[in-house]
Amino acid sequence: MRHTLAYLSGLSALLLPVLARPAALGEARILERQDQLDDEYDYIIVGAGTAGLTVANRLLLTPRTVSDEVIEAGNGRNFNDPGIQYNITSVPQPDMNNRRQFVWIGCCVGGSSAINGMVAVRGTRTEYDAWAELGGPNSTWTWDGVLPYFKRAMHFTPPEERLAEAFNITWDPNAWGQDEDTKVYASFPNYQNPRLIPMYNAMAKMPRMDIPLDGAGGENGLYWYPSSLDPDTYRRSYARTGHYDEQIQRDNYHLITRQKVRKVLFECDETTAWGVEFFSRDDPEEVVSVRARKEVIISAGTVHTPQILQLSGIGPRPLLEEAGIPVNVELPGVGQNFQDHAYLSVGYTWGNGVGPPVPDIPQLGNPSSVSGPNLGAWIGLPTMTEDFEDMAARYEAQDPAQYLPEGADPTVVAGYAEFQRVHAKLLRSKNTNLMWFPLNGGAGGIVMSMHIVSHGTININVTDPEASPVVDYRALSNPTDMDIMVENIEYMRKYMASPDFAPYGPRETNPGAGVTGEALRAWIRQTYIPTNFHPIATAAKKPKELGGVVDEELRVHGTSKLRVVDGSIMPLLPGANTQQPVYMVAEKVSIPLRANLDKKGAILTLYLHQAVDFIKAAQ
Image 1 (tube, rainbow, N blue to C red):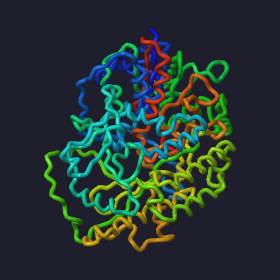
Image 2: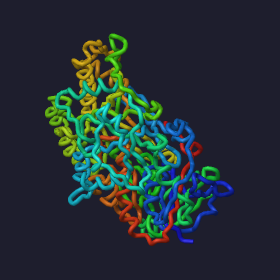
Image 3: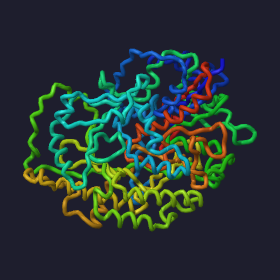
C-alpha cells in the first residue's frame, strides 16, 4: 500500500516498530514493529511534537471524529513526569559562573506542547515583519502574511461575561480564529484571582504603558491572554489532543513509537532526499530505512533537528569532518544562531504582610481551572527606559564577529550583521516585546528578556555523534543582554515603587534595593536562567549567504525533497512563548504540501518514546 506521510515523533525520532501488535493512542492507530511499516510513503515526518502532528493532520484529506479519551495524567493539565522529557544539560556557561542549564523539552507524542506553560500568545506585528526582513525580498512571513495561520492554529473561546466585566478582560474577535476544524483551543479559565485587580491598576498607570484591545492583534502593552485549555473540561489542549487523539483510525496515517532517526538518506547526487534510516530503542541493532515519494520533513525541534541534519552530512564542514561524517551539503548555519528567552525572579514582600486589599468580586468559577498567568505586561525598551537610544546605538556599533563563537563561518558572521541591523531597530521600537512581566497577584515576580542577542550553538558531539547534542547557550556572552536584564530589574523596581503600593510598604528582598551597579550584574550572573524553554533558530529561515539553513518555503538550502518545519526555522525570537508561533509555522507550510497530495495520500509518523538508552546528557 502507498502511504502519504511517514511521521517520526519525539525530538529525535526514527521510524521503527517496537512491540508485537498495534496499540491504541486515543482512537488513532500506532505501529509498534518495523515489519508493520510500508516500504514507501508520500511524506515522512521526523518528530511527533507540536509542529509534526500539526503538519501530519493538516495533510490528511480524510474526515475525522472526536474520541472519548480523557487524559488523566497530571489531572489533565500538567505533565511533569521526567519520563516524558529529554535528559539533556548544557555545557557550563562562563558568564553564569560556569553553571549548567537543564534543557527542558518534551519527549512524548505531542512534544513540548504536552509540558509547556500553556500560554497562548503571539508576539507583535513589528517582530514578524522583522522575520520577513531577515528572509529577503518578497518574503511572505510578515505579520499580515502569518496572521491567517495564527487564526487557523487555535480555536479561540472568549471569557465568561461576568469575568470579563469584573476584570476588564477585552478581546478582538477579528484577531482570532474559530474554525470548527481546529481542535487546539485558546480559552480562559472560569475563575480569576481578585488580587490581580490592584496589580493591573498599578501597571496601567506606568508611564507610556499601552492597553491594547487584544495582544493577539499584534500590539503590545498590558493585556489579558488565554491559555491552551479545552473550554469544556479545562484540561490541557495540545498537539496530541488537537491533531492526533481526535483522529479515527486511518489507513493512510501510520505513527510508530520508540524510534530514533539516524539520518536522512540521499540519492546518488547526495542532495535529493529519498527517505530516512532509523532504529528502535528496544533493538538498536536492527536498522530500517523507509522511502518518501515526495518529501522528508524534519520536525524534531530546535535541539534535535540540527543533530539529524548534521548526522546526514548537512552542516558546517569543519564540524562534520572532525566527527568523521561525509559532507553532503556544506551549510555552516546548521546548529548556529541558537536563541532562547531568559528570565530571573526578583523577590519582594509587603510591609503590612498582605499587600493591597482584595476587591470583593463574587465568583462562581473553580480556581483549579487556572493553569497559569493570564495577565501580563509585554513591554518595549522605549517604554522601560529613556536610555533606549543609547543602548541601541551601543549594540549597533558592535563588530558583528566580536561576540560570536571563535572561528564562526563568514556567512554566519554576515547573517549576524543583518540580525544586528534589524535587532537594533527592534530595540528602538515601542512595539517590540523586549520584556514580559507576568502579573501574579503578589509582590515582585519574574522578569523575562524576550529578545536575546547572544547567539549559542547546538551541535553533535564529535566524539559520539549519536549521543545527546551539545547545547551551549553562550548566555550573556554579548553584554547587551546584561544591559537589558538590568533594565528589566529596574523596571520592576519602578513598578513596585508605584504610589498605588506605597501604603503597603513593598520591600525588595532579593537581590535587595541597595544592590546596584556591578553588584547587581554579579547577582544577575549568579541567578540568570538562559532559557524559558523556547529554543529557536538552529535551522534559521534566512538566505544561505547569511548563514541560513532553509529558504522561505522551509526547504533546506542545497537539497531537494527535504524540509524543516519546527521552531528551529525562526530567524529571531518572537516576543512571545513559542507554542502558538510553532503551530503557525506548521499551518503555513501545510498549505503547499497538501496541494501536492491526491485524495488517497498517506502519512507515516515516527515517534521517539524516550532516548535515555541512547542519548546521554552533554558533559
